[in-house]
Amino acid sequence: MRSTALIIMQLFNNYRPFLVGSVANETASKSSIINIHLTSDNSEEIIHVLEKYKIFYRSHERQLKINQKINKKFMGLKFNYQDTNIELTIFSYKESKHAPISRIDNKPMKRIKLKKLEKLLAPSLPVI
Image: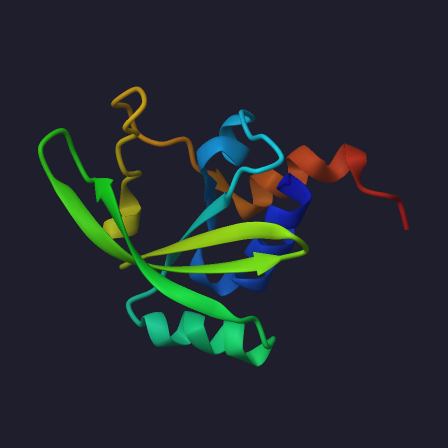
């Protein structure tokens, strides 16, 4: 699943992607969703990328904890890629500076940047 996440994160490289959730935490099952946080003050830019690659998506809202007391709704996009469900959540540049709070342990979510994911997967990638 991390290899699939890497492909999607590379597609959205210009939007500071972070891998989060069960795939980032290494607790994913085959039915898990790949969750990626993106940064953009204009969600239309992200929609344009999906449309450019003819990826059918649907919009949704995702409620996340910003701190111990505040929950906030964020725009999200869901789609399927290579039989895997992908969920993108869009943060403004200001909002992306701090990781949302995990509902599981009340600590900041583990977020993996694209470069770190590339390094984690490098030993398993074929040498060309």
